[in-house]
Length: 221
Image: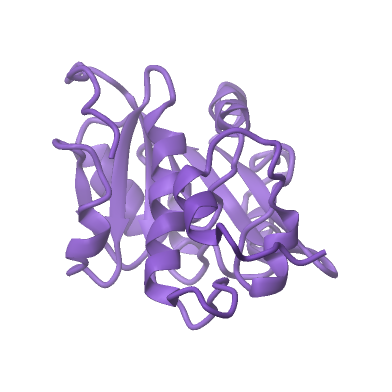
């Protein structure tokens, strides 16, 4: 675990929150405990958002009781217990966020620059998305950023759309009152199946917990 960060100002208006939603798909290869692997992915993804400058890291839990997930965060990290993206954004706004990004828990090697690009895009749009790459094209989102409070059309769309919805970006754009309100940044990958592990680049810095757990297990090609 990394040492706790310097205290953040209460006036900080940007939050980046990792979602912890244990799902049916497991990226763990044979011989690696799926629960331990899920936590390694979560901790590495959390470390990405916790390292962003002028951004407060947070954790969103669904289901709400996940002590193992809370244990990977730095002391003082805001914990949000919400089942929908709209609810998570609203809770972060109540904590003082003027803008927030929600990040999938299985992107341990996500470049911080991509989250930064989403925040910059909010200067001209109410929301911005980073799509997830799938074998057959876009498959859900890696991250979604928005200015807060959410506009009504976006809040309504997010009640039945989440980061795992395959056509999430298309749904959000269809709900927007006019084109251009949900721009997208560069896409990235998520690790949702064992085959996705081939997307990890051992030469990239970061994802230390995932790397350690995979030691001795060759990545698929």
